[in-house]
Length: 333
Length: 276
Image (cartoon, rainbow over all chains, first blue to last red; front, top):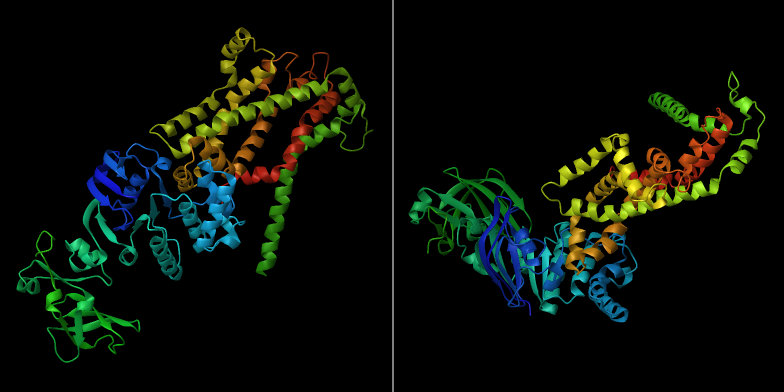
C-alpha cells in the first residue's frame, strides 16, 4: 500500500506550462523529498498528487489504480500544509477527529483513535485547546495528528517546517523521520531546504522549472550530481566552480570541488590565495578565499583554524573528488 | 509640554466627534421628543425643546387607531425572512466567487453591484405587474422575495469580502480530510465566517426593516410593515406631527434597540479584516 506513479503528467496555468511532461515513481514506504528553488513546481507537483489541482494531461496512479480524476478525499492521502491549516474554531480533539467524522466513523472509535494519535504526538494535555492557544511546534503536531488518524496510503508534506524557528525545525525534522520509521508509510515531502532533503529522504527528487533534474539517494546526489544545477544545489556550503585554465587542465568546461574536499595550509599547496572572511563555527571553519586569478572559493576546514581576514594561504584539492562538467552543464564521466 | 499639546488636540477631537454624533442623532431625538408633545406643542414656534407638557396621548391614539402589532410582525417576518433567504443563496454564491473564481467572477460582482445603481422606480411597473399577475401583491412572501432580490448584491459582496480573508489552505485541508462540498461549507467555512455572517445578517435586517419604497408600493393592508404604518400618519386629513412622531418612534424603536445591543458585533464585522 502506498506506491505512487506519475505518467507523462503536465500542468499548465493558462498559457504557462508549469510542469512539462513528467514521469516519476514513488515506491511503497519510501520517504521521497521534492527539493528545488522556489517556483520550481515542487508544490504544484504535490498538489497534483493530492488532487487539489487537476492535471492538464497524463495520469497519476496510486497503488496501481488510476487516480487521475478522483477527488482528493477518495485518494486516501493525507496532507500537512505549510500554514498547518488547522480549523481555528475547533478544539485540538475535534481537529484531529475531523477526517474520521467525515468518514462517518462511530464516536467511540473516533475517540480511541484520537487518543492514540495524541499520545504518539505528546498532545494529550492539549486536546481541549484551540489551535490559537498552541505554539508553532504543537500546531504542526496537531496537523500531523490529523493526518495520522486517517491511516492514509501516503503522507504529503508541503514545506511543513518553514514556519518554525531553527531549533524547533531540527526537532520536528527528527520527529517526522522517527514517525516514518514507526509507521513505514510512504511520505512525500516538499522543501526548498536541501539540508531537510539530505537528512530525511530515502530518495531525493531535484526539480528546476518543473523538470526533474535528478533522482537519487542523498549520497548518490552528493557523490554523482548529474549536472551543474544539482551539484550547486546539493551540499552546504555550496560547491566551488572554476572555469578557464584550471578547468581546461582537467579536460572540462567547468570543474566543481566541494568546500570539504579542499584543504588549506600556510606553507604549500596548489593555489595561492588570500582569506576574505573566516567563519568560526567551532566544529568547522568556513573560509572564503580569493585566489590569485581572482576566483572565489569556499573552504571547509575541520575544527578550529586560526586564520582571519587578509592571511595568505595555500589551497589544495582532493584530485579524485573533482567534478567535471561539459559546456552544456552536464557532468562528464 | 508636548503631552499638554497632545491632550489639547485630543480634547478638541473629542468635542468635534461628540458634536457630529449629536448632530446626526438630533433628528431621531427630536422625533422621540415630539412624540410626547401635544399637537399644539409639536408645531409651536419657536420650537419647544424640553419645556412642554409630557403626554402619552399620541401613543394611546396611535395604538387605538391602527394595529401596531400586525405591522410589527409583518416587519419582523419580512426583514428576517428576506435576510435568511438572502444568506441561504449568498453563502454558496460568495463561496464560489471567493474560492473558485472563474474568468468573469469580477465582472459578475460588478454587474450585481450595478443593479443597485438603478433607481428602483425604474422597475416599479414591471415588478408591480409581475406581482399582480403572480398574486403576490400585499403578501408577506412577495415582500420577502423582492427584498431578498434588492439586498442580495450587498449580502454577496459583504460575504465575499469576509470569505476572501479565510485562508484557502484550510478549505483544502477539509477537502483532503474527506469533507464534501456541503460539509466544507457547513462545518468549516461558515463557523469561521460567523462574525462576518452575523454582521451581514444584522445590517440586512436593518436595511430591510427600513426599506420604504417597495414595502409601500407593493402592500395595501394585509402585509403592510411598519414603514406603511408610519406613512399612514402623513395623511391628507392634515399634518399630525405628534402622532406621526409617536408612530415613527414605535417603528424605529425595535431596530434601534437591536442595533444598540449588537453594535459591537456590527462594528467588528464591518471592520473585519481591516486590521489584522
